[in-house]
Length: 401
Image (cartoon, rainbow, N blue to C red):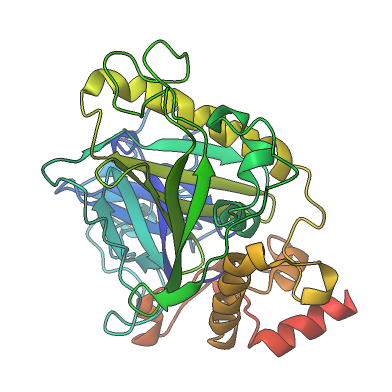
């Protein structure tokens, strides 16, 4: 898991104006809330006074949790603004100047596509990766389903690699029409990968030899007149591809025909090493009637469920560093490209040392993901989350484990 990237925190419509919301991301607790202007804010969740959770519950549930745009610590009432600075400490009197160290990490936030995103890291604005732009969002001729959030019990890298895998559809997704393969002719089409995405990832397109698409009356198709294809035609050629943007964002393009397309965006929230929340945005430029949203939502949930069954039981749970620990094929070219990008992020010093974190977090140390403010000021109470310097150091740690 890596700092210095944009991560989804919570759906916009789940973040109200009266109560803070907790979220664990990268193994660390965060708190999200709205300030006096309704702007979403994300802070480190640990109060620097006595270690209480800023997003934790009041014991009696009677006092307000957001006051004058500040989140109020439920233990002693300290009030933290969206900038992370403590504005009031009741025990010394409201309006009294607070100590410089009475602050928590505050992270840059963008609210787009119905999601609150936070940049979790200390990289300055001029050098940090931008949030992926969904070009179709809000454009005429395109419509979006509501965000589907999937809470899955496995490591996010395994989830990303599954979405990049063109060779599993025939075996995992019978609802695609791939109930089996022709053993005499089947072979995964060749493809190439290309680095792009503004220097933060790669892309590929792949040709599928696909059965006819579901028609009106088919229980897997949306209701009404649906231009999914002609049931009387022969097998069709579908072009689908994807790529990555940073370690945790994956766009997928599905071109059913030249003018009927899905654009799918997976914004993944690594909760910890064993759990991931996937914020799934599905765009389409056909069957635009909103009455089809529910059926498309249901179909996507079924497809995701088929992946979840397989991915829950992978061994090892984390992707191995060495290619000799797996037998990879040409169809795995996208997975290799993704791992190459992770190696680049490793060498930037952005990978969290999860072994050290798990050993000491909550025992002898309370950690925070460093925010950009740490580059310009001192007096921070919480320790920065431990990181691995580079891929070579990480491999030594894993070999010794």
